[in-house]
Image (cartoon, rainbow, N blue to C red; front, side, top):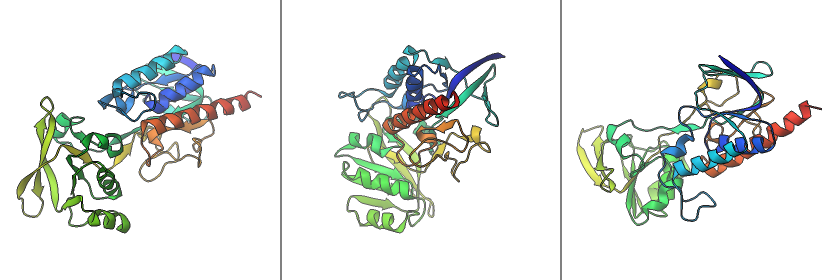
Length: 313
């Protein structure tokens, strides 16, 4: 078991974690960054990113994350490409363990992100990022003057559908029930919009298309009451059935809400344990954007730096 001590340990390597690493390393705090099994986070599965400032021609998700990682490494961030198996936040210094590392740290920044929930169909896995997305804000622009679908019936699905009407000519809202679960005002806005057509009592039976030949071309729907199958032609499908924060590691250790998002002080990143900070999608169920994650990564780093300075007095 390899053992070492660092002033700051960062768990998670998406935009939030890497930004925290850049700031804490430039502050000469010698951070260690646990990258996990998917270095770069969710953005490494995204093909084109056009809404991140500084890249007027756009950039792929993997390239953006590699550049950010290179920047963190330039300032001597220690990278550990392993999954964290356990943490001990009961006393300081805090302890973080992987299968062969035991690292203690004076401050911890949690940036473990969240995962969008998908239906789990083989055709969905095949066509993800080739017409299938879980973020209308990220990808809606690509479907200007095209027909799209949204899968879901809650507030998130309603918001995605309404947002997509800015670009798409038609939005089919696919919901397994005969009425929306969304709040009354959101449901009313959806049902009154002339670009949105609900597909009631319906589930996705299959996504249609070829990732190597234009991507998604349609969806085969199944009526849950009659069993009837029908196909609709769409160029994009947005799965809006929820997100799951990757916070199981901290259950029972840090305060979190009913959905598992870590609770932080309003306007800050401080968690329920002094010296532990949370940033990015593991604490943000509202924005869930790369740029906001990076912003909170900066906040967490500054808070950790200032708190450590106070401890050294």
